[in-house]
Amino acid sequence: MLKKVDVLLVALSSPIQIGIYEDNRLIDTIVSTEKSSDILPIIFDELLKKYNVKKLFYANGPGSFMAIKVAYIFLKSISILKNIPLYATDAFKFNKNQPIKAIGKLCFVKILSEIKTQKLEIVPEASFTLPNLLDYNEFSKITTPLYGIGAVG
Image 1: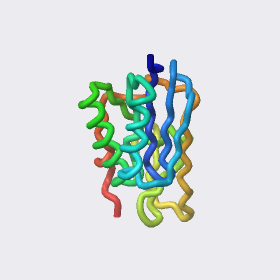
Image 2: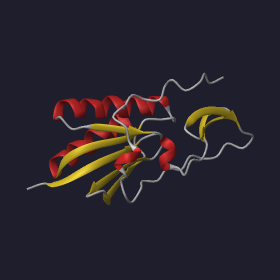
Image 3: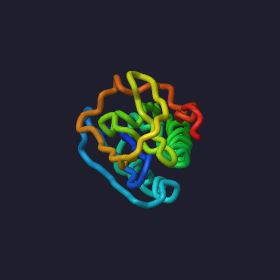
């Protein structure tokens, strides 16, 4: 019998990170610097053979719009085809609420619960980490990517 797990994907920048959670605890991590469109099908093919995936989670932005779009379409497809619920939360949960590069010197920042763009002289490198414990309360069933964040320019 396959182990029941939840899977969390953070694919906002390189490397992409995938956390495997059993009873909300991180039991395995997969990290890849490959393009998410190339590597996600391979990784998830193996995961779905190895585990009974109960829930899918991902960071739906802000970050690389292309990476977010690929992650969303990929996970939404698996969610529909395999009847696995999909949940999302913003990227700030995985980088200690630090600014996330948008374009040029513009960064995404989260002030209270609002995500805005802000010009910063020194643009920090985004560093995302998977939590050791998965808190379901931090995720939403509204999983569409965060594209509606103010105009960047």
